[in-house]
Length: 502
Ligand code: SAH
Image 1: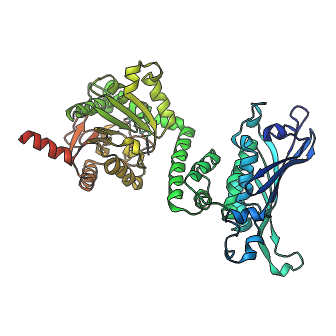
Image 2: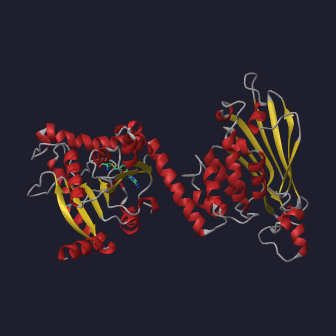
């Protein structure tokens, strides 16, 4: 089982820097023992212009049998010969990935103590693996590596060179060309070689999810074959695959969010601006109100929270932390947790509330955590109240049931406050062209009937009562600009009734 990594260099950046990156001296051949045999690292070529490192894993078939995983998939477990005569010693698979992890662990992590600037450097790389076990063949090899920036040359290896009519084996000679930091290349191989082989030589346990996410950092979330990669990497264990996919989705959202951070910021500030302008520019609003709508909304939320006697409060989709700051200013709120999927929004929020400079007691009352409301999250259980202020309309309607379950079904706070725009009111915004939503990131805007229906269904399904509260001037024809639903968990209702009776 064999793999080479090759790079070219210049006098300023010699190719032999590869030795620093791999933590293996180009002048020496080294051997490392692993549970399945001996891994050798040596450099067939080591010059400033060109340097090639080779990893040769000399698999001990007896060790494989001792570890109980001698058979390739489809091999007969009981046939004595199959335990010894199989492809495992020769074809690159999860064994080679484990060897990469063991022998090049610092390089895989992108660490280089001697030359800390090196791991970041993009190198022209050529990776060659003469025999990769590839279920899915050349096509899958392309589908896995090409989206990662590799130029892929993959040739099927014939079953027998003497008899081409026998067709191809499932082995592929692989050559990858690309320009990237070495750690990226190693992480791609570490994950994708076992995925191609699709036959792990060891029992896949829960910590494999962590390994996958660590090695997949920066490239796996959003990879077009992500589903196949997680499923095969985790040996098709459904629960693990689901856990991995959820965490990847979170990462993808966060990364996409960081990329489009501008637009997220705009989303929040545009809401604010729209709102601010109706105080200064009466022409935009048939019913000019004394305060910006965002301020009125926060006042309505704070009032409802105080009425509910909430002390420990979640602000779900807290954005840039305006409400968190106001909650912090009132000592009745003893614990405040702001949650958002956008790291960038949370960074702004931390700055807005001066998180770094808060005294110990204030700091103990507030937390900002990153998370997606589309998934259940044990950290959100047991609170008195949760606020979803101008958040639901940022989710695709088909994802809404997931949020409903996560909030009303799993987190189950005593009170839930939900605000969203009332689309009927849009005709009153004179600068808003007919039929348009208030913000480009709004996936939908509901009229009063739609919101009431939604609230009714959620309340029914999850055992909450609810009332609707207008926020902003309540126009006789089109209603208020913002609509709020106040949900109260039924047990609370019962308790309160009980107390009143006593
Ligand atoms: N609550 C704030 C911000 C509303 S903007 C306010 O009233 O001003 C909507 C916010 O929801 C954004 O910060 C966005 O990042 C966040 N968001 C959108 N989808 C989310 C999801 N699935 N999980 C968590 N936050 C989400």
